Image (tube, rainbow over all chains, first blue to last red; front, side, top):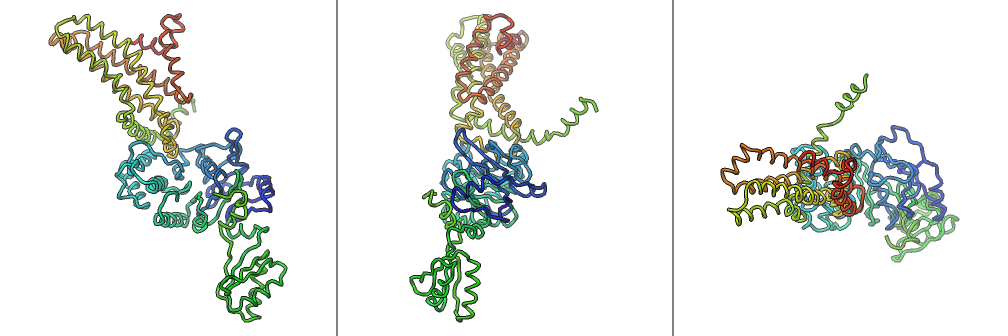
Amino acid sequence: MSASLGDRVQVTGDREDRMSNVVSASAPRHSDANRQDRIILENVSKFYGEVLGVNRVNLSIPPGVTGLVGPNGSGKTTLMNLMTGLIHPTEGRVSVLGISPTRPEELFRRVGYCAQFDSFPKGVTGFSFIYNTLRLHGLDDREAVRLSQEALERVGMTEPALRKVAGYSKGMRQRIRLAQAIAHHPTVLVLDEPLNGLDPMARAESLELFQALGKQGLHVVISSHILHEVDKMSDQVILMSSGYVVAEGQIHTVRTEVKEHPMQILIRCSDPNLLASRVFAQDHVVEAKLIDDGKGVLVRTRDADAFYLLLNQLVVKEKLSLETVAPADDDVNSVYQYLIGSENKTI
Amino acid sequence: MTRLARLRTTLAEQPWELWTRQIAAVLRMDLRKNFLSRRGIWIYLLAFAPVVIITLHAIIDRHSGSMREDTEVLAGIFQFFYLRLGIFFGCLGIFTWLFRGEIIEKSLHYYFLAPVKREVLLLGKFVGGLVTSVTLFGLGVFASFAMMYLRFGDAGQYYIFNGPGMGQLLAYLGVTVLACIGYGSVFLALSLLFKNPVIPAILVLGWETFTPVLPSLVQRFSITYYLKQRN
């Protein structure tokens, strides 16, 4: 099994199969060059006594924005803590851009981690919180001040920076932690629920920032409960459940691989009745339903490629005029519901 | 290449300048916490309680007692209060809180998210605790000494600057520094090994109290034994 996100996808039939498939896969071999620009987890397991954190995880995360999705207790934070060396695996190996997390003095020159803990050293101001961390990096006063101000500006916290963190709102504390994580210009950014407590404006700005960082070639690993936002910002996703990686890859490809749930495609056209009757005759079409306004058809098909081919033929043959053709369940939310949702009603 | 030459090369290759800057950064953060936190008030009390008592004694009993008597009283205060109680409990409070405090306040991970070697962090924290304890108890001992002899006027000044006074003061301060290093190391180690370091600290206190009556070989395993050698 190759386990590279973005290059491939790993999903199978029912949950037990999916898990056994993922866990039974042998750990992939990675070349040195490959290690240098990827976050690699090889056969990684973490147990807290008898409690499972994550089990036999194999991942190779390329640059870009990677969304980590799963219900509470699925192992997202454990995975992030493993990547950043805050905890060590019971079994297996972790490597971040070729650096072992057991060498924090090297790792954190290139990694920024915004953890979920909403706690700060006593009495710090927003500015001194970031400044102190930069001094711990070994930077001199001038450079630490410059980078602190730059980070505060990026998260929109320049104005309250000299106030004590204890007086900040939850959203402000979240942003100041984010500023601390990005202040030293890391190549890898690990963000545990970074959108929690942010108002809609700050959320939008943060999403924009993450996407911009991803486009710059950074590894941005983000866990979030808000699926449509993960969908919007992620280049690839990792779906986790009960300590296992259930699916991974680009969301569209992951969706295509979920064979047991036919793809839903919404088509708005000039003659929906005709289209519905024509497509329903096909074996791979499970359902063709006229939508409420009568101007479109919702098709459920087991073979999206065959359906698109058929649609092209019908357009030519029946002189249909198409307004919209869009996948209706080709997003993180749907994939999540199909793969995990039935077992975990809430996330 | 000889072993010594290899060691020299290895030492020369280490990023000493970076480590020094990182220790200074840890120190700056910790000193502020150690000196300015409300939690540390009782350590101030421990360090300066004898100063208050000696000052009151100097004001109330201005014309009683001899310098010889007071020198013995000061020696007693140093031996039995500072060494056995003040510095012991002061260091217990300061050094066990260096990491435990961060764990309780859930802020230790911020140190772990910086590119700092764990050894450098440990050293930075230890130096922070040492500077705090030496400053507080050194000042306490110094102020006790000054208040004890100040009331004797010219005779007191002569005793300090032309008699054995200065040597005595330096010896007290030297032993204070050594006591802070000794107790500080033990308590820092205990705080890293035990979730609640108070119970092993009580055992250390018992050990330090009773070793003087044990055989001389066993006495060597106590901090007080070495401090007495210096005193």
